[in-house]
Amino acid sequence: MLSGRRYRLELTAEQAEQCEEFGDICRAVWNTALEQRREYRRRGAWMNYVPQAAELAEAKREHAWLKRAPSHVLQQTLRDLDRSCHERGTFNVRWRSKARWSPSFRFPAGNLITVERLGRKWGRVKLPKLGWVRFRWSRPLGGQIRSATVGRKGGQWFVSFLVDDRCKTPEIHAMPDTAVGIDRGVTIAAVTSDGTFYDRHFITPGETVRYRRLQQELARQRKGSANRCKTVAAMGRIMRRVADRRNDFCAYTANRITARNALVVLEDLRTRNMTASASVTLAQPGRNVKQKAGLNHAILDKGWHKLELALRNAARHTGSQILLVNPAYTSQTCNRCGHVDAKSRKSQAAFECTACGHRDHADVNAAKNQRDAGLAFPACGDLGTSRSAKQEPVGRATGRNP
Image 1 (cartoon, rainbow, N blue to C red):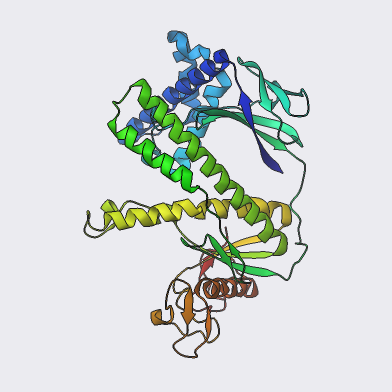
Image 2 (image 1 turned 90 degrees about the vertical axis):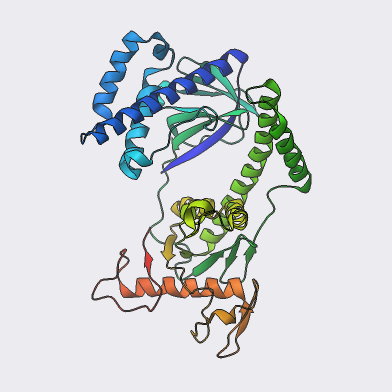
């Protein structure tokens, strides 16, 4: 099984300058190759990795600055672009902006990477053209290195090793007859069908005040100035701590849930579509933009998509199955009698069925409906994305196997 190991780098001034240069070169290669692919598509032709890699070798003879970065790093950039174009479409792949894109590059050859441990807290890694680089030894590698990715986040450089830990996903979960539904929300991050609430504040009140002051300073500073760069770096440090807390929360929650349940049922939520700007999603663009922006911020702050990814990653180690079901009417359906009525949802937290009088926490009731919808699929023997003619009807709930 392939797993990731991330460590904080301690670069010298020369090495930091080299990493910045490698990132700029990879960004230029990405943007140039993407523009070439788009131009070919406009003409009705195709361009893929093989001819672009050959043209890259020719371009290195004419442009000496391309030779400063390792060859296999640039080739890996073209491979990443090729995969993104196949998965998303050539015109849906984004440009790598110098202002918005955080520099990163990957060393795909694991046999060229050497790692040594220097002590209890420090280690070092030998990377092509960078030499020996010290990093904080926060956890053991636990496997053979397949590749290494160097990237910058919040003003700090990190290295992520992809290692083969030689573990295998269990064929049967330790508790095979268990199942749980998870309802994700903006007030409480995750609520399970067994009544467990998972939530955490990712930014402290002091950081909120500090970040708002930095935003005010940023609005008054001239673009390109040294003070503006310092302000952006300070804002990035705060957001890096917030993102680390969110990732830690999602990993903690996912490990607890998958260890106790063989089947984990989630709503099939398209987070990217749900958090699109109101100026392009509403029937009348420009209306309720502020309210929609607040909802988008709340969804992204709770990390809905990150939790789903963390559950899938944790399920590889426990053998749990992650199932997505149709979210329609799950918050309006009574789990006891099945009656559907929007008036049953009295408030964000209160649910009282207008038919049978059943009372429960609204999120817990929705999570139970998701769990029951997920349990219906294995019984039918058909986990496809669409229901076959021989499959038993399951009412409104439909799902797809991830």
